[in-house]
Image (cartoon, rainbow, N blue to C red; front, side, top):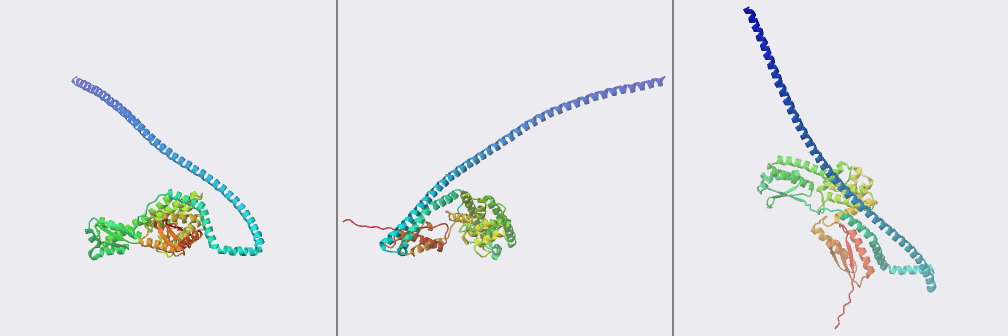
Length: 509
């Protein structure tokens, strides 16, 4: 019985334990469910918060993009307005030029009719004079012609002077005015710097003690530097400065860069000098290519052989009378293109020829001959068009220009070289040119005095009035011009002015 009770007690204990275990499990399950629900609610709150933040961020981004788009649209509208204004101005200019052309055509028609009438009247007058001469002098027509020719020969010099003066007046009324307007418009539409290049470079030193380190023990550093670069280093009493002298601008630039790096590095010995010079050469070669490509970009010229681009870049380090040759080449391209546009021609070929016209100067110290002919051979070798080749070889009249493109490049070259501040020349050559100009004018008979003025741009000749009349003075100006063109070399043009003055002075007593 006791065993039965024991078993019943054990069963009851097990049942009670299971009951309490079940209650505990249910309680834990409810707690876990409560935590899950709390986590879900927290996640929902965070999701809502993230959603609001995302919406706010998206709205801000949309507003930013809209503002950027509005700014771009506003800028585009401004650009379109500028283009529209430019097109309107261009249209007005074309209309004015059309009106001018119509007026010129009408004027030419009137002149043609007047010339026809004049010729008809001259023929009638000629016949009348012939009949009158035959009647009065008892001469035949042939005899009258011979007598007339003898009279003309006596007055030939006078007639030549009159004709030269009339021709100059006619040319000045039309050709000079049109040419001046064309050139002035082209120059006004382009602005450039004044010349500022030299054959020396100055490198600043942190102190005068650096001069001794540059020279080195027994001069080994300076000798190595000069031998490797091909320049002359001038180390004198100038405080904290070293002068690099060379007529080769590329060598001078390599030397300048190398010396500045040596000074900054502080380690100056032959091995380091050689290393930095090689690096400077690579740097200058990169600059040459960059300048050549920049010149193409500035002038709008495309599809040029890479070797020609490199030669163009070399012109950046070349000067002519102090004028940078690459800058001069770009000016010629701009001027020639502007004049071509004014004349209604295609400016592309003209700009290309203008940019390449002095390409021969990049190698003229290596190849014999005029730089125009050298340049012609270079552009022909690299596949340029015939119009470009001819314009390059004719820009200094080594051959006569046969195309309008060649004439425009020649004119643009003269404009760029002769504009104020473009070039400089030494005092000796300047004085020599003025003396030559005055000597040429003084060599002619009847000249009293001659003066070269306006920096050699004009020569004024005072003649003896009792020896030269007005017609012969006009002929003298023409003869002086021809001799100046033959014997002198000068940029731009020289004006010759002949002054003939007669004075009568009396005194009342």
